[in-house]
Amino acid sequence: DADVTQTPRNRITKTGKRIMLECSQTKGHDRMYWYRQDPGLGLRLIYYSFDVKDINKGEISDGYSVSRQAQAKFSLSLESAIPNQTALYFCATSESDFPEGAFFGQGTRLTVV
Amino acid sequence: AQSVTQLGSHVSVSEGALVLLRCNYSSSVPPYLFWYVQYPNQGLQLLLKYTSAATLVKGINGFEAEFKKSETSFHLTKPSAHMSDAAEYFCAVSVSGGYNKLIFGAGTRLAVHP
View 1 (cartoon, rainbow over the protein chains, first blue to last red):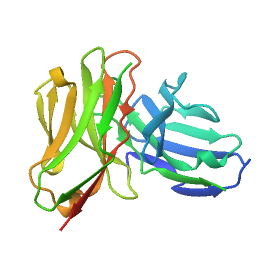
View 2 (view 1 turned 180 degrees about the vertical axis):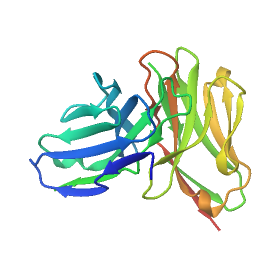
View 3 (view 1 turned 45 degrees about the vertical axis):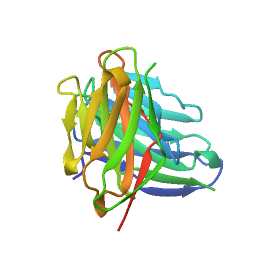
View 4 (view 1 turned 120 degrees about the horizontal axis):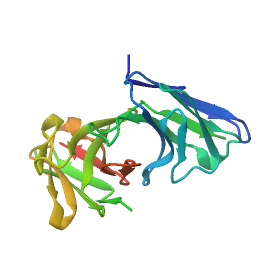
């Protein structure tokens, strides 16, 4: 089983719909992250969480919300999806200070039509 | 604030040729630096990392990178490209301690042709 699992892997949704992307990890890490990947822009940080009670906005949090249900689970929600949220979304985990870097899920390809 | 610049969004090399992917960083304190690779339809895989030990870092698949503080660079190299190296490569920086985060460059897509 993968260390970081994202569901769904692919999703097409309509403008205005609410959608949730889920992430679970078996690494036992406290820190979890949601990134968005767009061509030519690399990965940009949406939200990050350093433990269940500590959630922080990243550089592009507008239009997104998150929930840290447990140490191992971190979900990303789009309350009202819009077409420019079409992207590849990655969840990642790490130990503090990134001694081993971050571990990434396989990604969720989201298309908003 | 720390940042990463990758020079060249696309690099094309011949099989067997040297691979050089450039990365420059900006950080006010000693950074941790990483190179990740993304194969088509896959997540990111760590290639190698610099965490203030040896400045020349060896990674998987024959890749290596050298941390040069004076040039604020962490370029990725491989002596001889293989077709299987075709992928997108990301350089990332994190500052040690505190509320640090992993900041990525825009990525470089490597093409390897016969």
